[in-house]
Amino acid sequence: MALWNLFDQISDAAPQLRVVLIIDEFDATPPKRSRRCCRPGEICISAAEYRALHSVILVGLQNIATLNLGRSSPFNIAHQLRLEGFSPDEVRQLLADFTVETGQGFAVGIVEEIHRLSGGHPFLVNRLAAILTEKVAPDRTRTISEADLQAAATTGNRNQL
Image 1 (cartoon, one colour):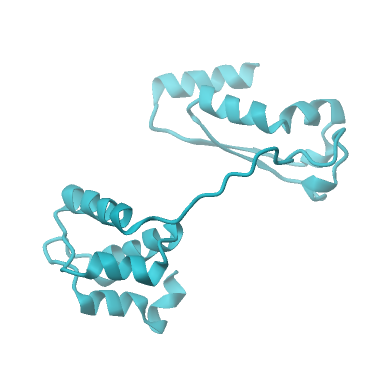
Image 2 (spheres, rainbow, N blue to C red):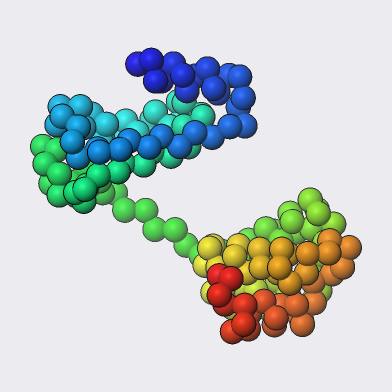
């Protein structure tokens, strides 16, 4: 429990910090200990309770699904959650938030074209917007144009995705 106390102290002292806990040779951990660690509910509850804990990485020679932890897999999914893509309105809101924060706007039709090109897929929307605003048009004083969007979407820029 000393480790959880450390996360409490980090959260209190520097709430902006995020800790990644790496457990090496996890497959060599005694089964009694690893069973408790791999209960997804406990990890999720712990992560919510200990705000500094951002991720847990388990490192070992075996695939975690092949470890015998007393059940078929430590990551059984009892309830599947399907995340839908962004609607055009959600893409519009996301980019409007960006404009409010940075002052950099988007020309008429750009938001709709970003939605069309990405199919609303959250990762693709965000990645295309990142390429546009960080690589193609990093000058926040200028509006993102159709030419900028085409440059971001061309084959030459796909290696940035």
